[in-house]
Amino acid sequence: MLRKVVISILCLIVLVFSIPITFLALHSDEPEVTQNVDKTDETGEENTLPVGAEADPSASPIAVGTKEPMDTISVYIASEDRVEEMDFSEYLKCSVAAEMPASFEEEALKAQAVAVRTYIIQRAEYYQENGTPEEHKGALTCTDSTHCKGWVSKEEKIKAWGVDGELYWKKISDAVDSTCGVIMMYDGKPINAVFHAMSSGATEDAKDVWGSDVPYLKSVDSSLDKNAPKYETTLSMTKEEMKQKMAENIPGVDFSDGIFGEIERTATGSITSIEIGKVKIKGSEFRSILDLRSTNVSFNVVGDVIHMTIHGYGHGVGMSQYGANFLAQEGKNYQEILNAYYTGIELVAYTEQ
Ligand SMILES: [Zn+2]
Image 1 (cartoon, rainbow, N blue to C red):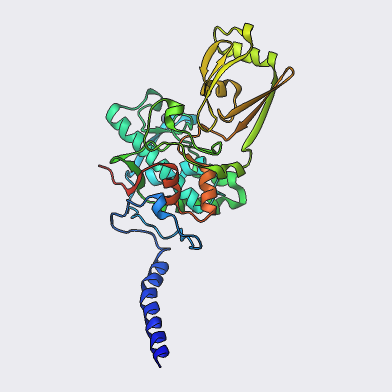
Image 2: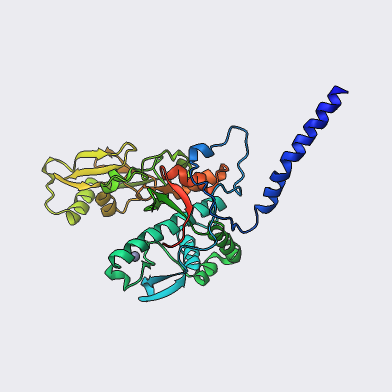
């Protein structure tokens, strides 16, 4: 008898608690138009699920916005040398499409959407206050990926995707829409949301790469990047070829004591500075002269040949895109991914001030 009562009570408890869960599950696919509930203090660590628990990527711990921070944005289309006023959301979709493979996981694409939105807002606010750079011809952003963020027109990209075109566009479109208005903030301001293709196994501290200390751009583990395609690349050349290449690009080199002198590296092994023919240059300069995929280079000299092994791709600061995709494959949602790469940030639905 007592057993029956206990079972009945247990059933009742399960039923009562499962109602809100079912309700939430049923509504998680709907466009998120929640109010600005402050749940943004959740960090990646707090979001870490206990072993055995399943992550529910659709369970959004932060409130997304009902509209983007800007309705439209002026964009300088570099290839056509003209400025176009674009719908902001459409601009974001075209930029995400240019910056990350659409075959990546949905949560990685959402993380990318938030990163691009944050980056553009941070820059746009700066340009609005301080004036736009000359090469923008008055626009707040441009389509040159080396200057601002990459951009490709919807039609062009759908065509390039071929049979998967419409499907991929929808995937990217959903990633932007389902994170509507969400950006990363630090100390009450939009962050400089830099990202790169893949790290050398850990991301770089901004201070080591660009010289200025940025509290949210610290070196973090990203060891899953080692599984990325072309994580390791190699380049070999003779000593003579190396000397010639360096002499063409660095004034005043003197190879009387050999080619390489002192090499300074970050904790991850990336070159911050390197002495070439008695001239000290930055690791980034060395990378650019040889067109290497990153500054994480190790050398092995055999006879007359210099063998270089390069790890990762890009400057290594902020979010690793491949790393984001690997985390998404492990069941992490976009908030967890962003919190893993940007230290101490807040995710908030942002409206123009
Ligand atoms: Zn630009």
